[in-house]
Image (cartoon, rainbow over all chains, first blue to last red; front, side, top):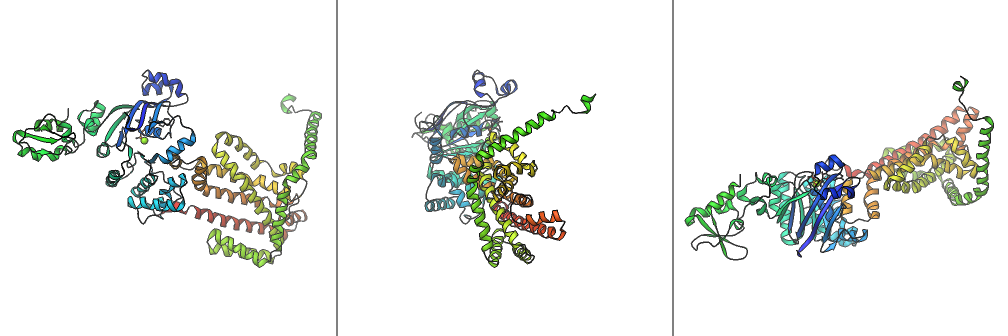
Length: 338
Length: 295
Ligand SMILES: Nc1ncnc2c1ncn2[C@@H]1O[C@H](COP(=O)(O)OP(=O)(O)OP(=O)(O)O)[C@@H](O)[C@H]1O
Ligand SMILES: [Mg+2]
């Protein structure tokens, strides 16, 4: 796939004293608990491959300890892999020397952290300008560009505060502004909103989506929260014990969970507000059926069925044309497989 | 039975031979390198002499002004500033001005030297565990060995005078600043360092922009302790020819002059309290950002 901004190929990460020694065993299929019991090494990632498309939000999801943080830190090589390959714009990140790697971190990627990672001794404006300062941008320009992003994330008036004087939500706005200020194309977000209250978290998601409408960054977003994943993710990948168990769109994950682990994840969500009509549509609709947008969710489509003759509606498909969806299909999709 | 009650020590002859051997070797060393070492330390000596002369030549009202100014700049507290100025006035009234200036000179230069050498060593220690495990025992020895013991080789090498005195003070006073620089840098939050890494900070940018600034409160605690320890060496240093408040104290000990000893001792205490209060409140102001509205 050539339109992938970031490619991860057969990535392995083993924590311990002699990772290279136990790697062959892992490749032969030694499990995470066995590796820990018999060899005292922790399996972080096993054979993870993922193509991350440009200008989209790629969510990586999994339970605690599944290797999400480990994976995202490989992209800018904060963690060295045991085996595998990582390409950014086709460039091999692992082959780079320190100077080249720093250049990638300065200009191509930027990161937002779960615990914010702000510099406590610097004011908000100096935190936001930090990446630019590292790049060696002139002071005057740093000030204007930092101010721009402070305004964009809604922190106008707090420029001279210290991080310790701000609430968690505001601190993460600083973190977001700092990451955006460098104009890098790739945004790495490791559980960026997980430390926030639900309402503030929803606000931050909205801010992110709003900015993304206009900025079109390649965003890799880590979360353990399915609602967040479904709201933000153009694509979702699911990790379990360091292995990739499913990757696809939100619709794929909900409608066709690859195994019970994922089905378990998805069983509590409100399916009516997640599943889209175009995920169900097929064939051609009869001409007298009411026609709805493909990205409408099932819940919004239900009233249309009441008026529809034969309980069939038409759906505008992404590729043009009008597919059909029956009420029976909708009921089945809402029930799920259990 | 005798084997158990008397420790089987080396024979007297062997021992005295051994000691003489070490002494001879060291004397040989100091004959060969003594002069080179003296030349090496000469700029330091000149600086110390210049500074002492400067303090003595400056009219006392100006010194009082400077002391008041520095105290205010450091502490931003009228209480501490007034206390410092009054203490110096009392010192002057009791005719200890010159000795105090001499002590001030050597303490300032010693502290400056300790900072200039100690902070880089502390940084080095913080960056490598090997360095830390190498330097820590050296610091332990420097802090615990009785100062009279290392005065001997210092005097053999450099004779009696200001420079050996200064070195003795520094050897004794440098460990805290090294330790606390190391500790301060190691205590910097790993999350913050990771963020710096993620934005592509070079090792130098991380050191100067993140590690040292965040370690500053600890570094300041180290400087404070270093000054205190330097002051406590004043009397011992005067035994090897350092002028200052220690000299009259020594005289008081050998002649049993109670009042003289007390006066000069109290002057040393006054200096210690002033240095301590000023540098501590400065250190506290440095970390003001940690006590923001929240937390
Ligand atoms: N430095 C390390 N040394 C040893 N094991 C580690 C290290 N870092 C991570 N691990 C292990 O690797 C596995 C994956 O950890 P990781 O932090 O990537 O999980 P995560 O999905 O981000 O979890 P969380 O949701 O708790 O953040 C865990 O089993 C963890 O214990
Ligand atoms: Mg994590």
